[in-house]
Amino acid sequence: MGVEMKVGVIGLGRMGSGMSNNLIRKGHEVYGFDVNQESYNRCKAIPMQPQEMAKRADVIILSLPTGNEVKEALNLLKDFRGTIIDTTTLSVDEVLQVLDQASINLDYFTCRLERGPKEANEGTLAIYCGGDRKTYEKLNPLLNDMGEHVYLGSHVQATMLKLLGNIIGTVIVALNAEVSTVMRTLDLDPETAVKALSMGGANNAQLFRLIWQAKGQHHESFSLDLAQHVVEMAINSCKRYGVKYLPLAELTNGMMLTAKSLGIGKRDVSEISKLLDMINSSK
Image (cartoon, rainbow, N blue to C red):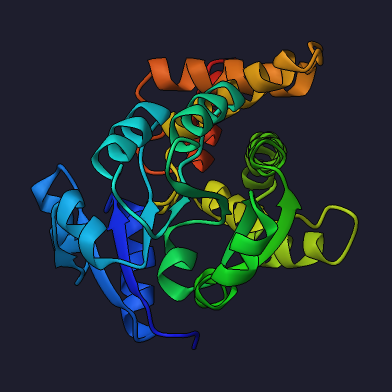
């Protein structure tokens, strides 16, 4: 457990509420705010408006849908004298806009998150950090309570690595979806097959989703809609730096757009396998 702090969390969705509950268990005093009143049912944070939060908290964590909400939150926190940790998934363009706004009078630090709501609740997130090195060192005790973390350098470097990680993970999920179709045709036991695959060169961090895909039982985690949004954001951010040919990422993005148009993927990105099932069964 780190040093007990007063922590505000703005955005109590799956990730924000998970982080809140974890930090409460670790002994921190946690305040929470969300525009959706039902979000307060997800966590035990003390409900509080951002302006009041700014008067009480040592650190305020942002866990918001897009850069627009981040900019709105920064306006509400303009008098905050603590540190703002932004965990929102942003494009490079959004990061630069946010930094331009935050640089006026705010102590702003980037923490891009990997893994999901389960790990947020357990305090086992992977955290890509960017910004002032001294701020990172100051935040170490709190970050230790949230998960594993690594300092990467600038806000943009941490952001881009997060986006590249999303490309890798989502392309692998799509590849696993193809494999799951063949596994079912062969009547392979999903757990046994995945255990075998994990022993060799096919081992990957998304194999747990391959079990879901092979069984056709998808848990609620990271929606296909959100995954597609982030991958498209990642592709556009790569193009900003002159890297314009990303065939696997573009193909996967196209598959997800098709799946979305068919209403597939409300629970998890792994449901992209349903699109492949539909295509293969129609032949």
